[in-house]
Length: 403
Image (cartoon, rainbow, N blue to C red; front, side, top):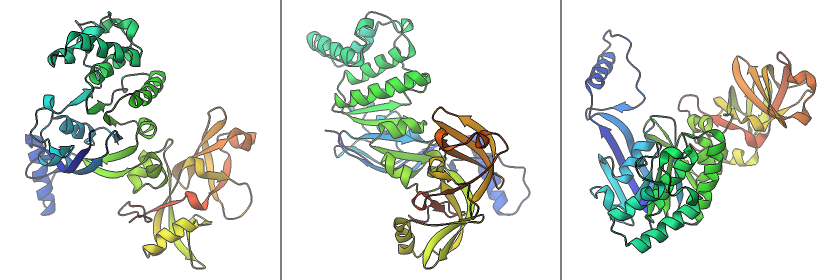
């Protein structure tokens, strides 16, 4: 059993000289003094230092697969390293099965970590790499042989046990790195962007291997990635981070269907969500969105969510995913755009368009298109389904259904 609890976890790095200079500039700006353009920072800077992770809260169930996802520098790897004990926790609590772990040494946490760069011992064979963590624990030789044979069989690396890492492909090295972690039978398995060095085909294969591997282990998984495809396919729940802050936590389907803010809406989904300047209006007692001359009355679920919050008519950012847009050549209140680039993807076409000066992508089955629409410069009219619209506050960037 391995449940984890992270409560109000914060990581602050002491300020460097350039950080202190930046903070002084910020103070001068508040006083209205002249200053040179400041170097942009995404992370918060306080008197204590740079806040890499701020008020991280998460309860993880036994054997749950949690994926922490976000762009580079958002704090996801720092969070994992705090769980592993490789980084000190500035504030907050980390508990495993109810036991406070803040000051417990990494070797005593019963966790194993798979690193991005494999971190294999080049002078050892595959077998020796797998045996090494067991030797440190003084596991008897016969038990060690059984564990190594099991891990090699599960990961399909039995034929390579007597080879050294330099004689293996990237995918095989990653399997060895995973094997070295699971051979210990840890309570918690931590994986820090383990597939980022592999090509697209190998990444797909290894994702499938990790899904199968999970079924044969009793571990709780925490997986860090910047790839939202990995997050959507692997995680029971996804933690989306930005600039040290948690933006949203939910199942892959929840964060896809109900993004909490503009960042989540743009980060989750490929291609990313289209965003239009629009208005939220009330028509005959019902909420509708207006984009250009087009008006779409929202679905009953969205009517209920907005009404419960007494949402007032206002200017909004309207979000619609590319796959939820419908082409319609009829005259009338439609949104109109000009095709910049038609991108043929086999059974689908991605139409990259210009709509009122903004980029827009529509995914359309090739069977639904005529040849004239698939040319640059073609004018296309479209609308979207009432249940596929998201409305965001332009100032707070929050989804008005969930504020």
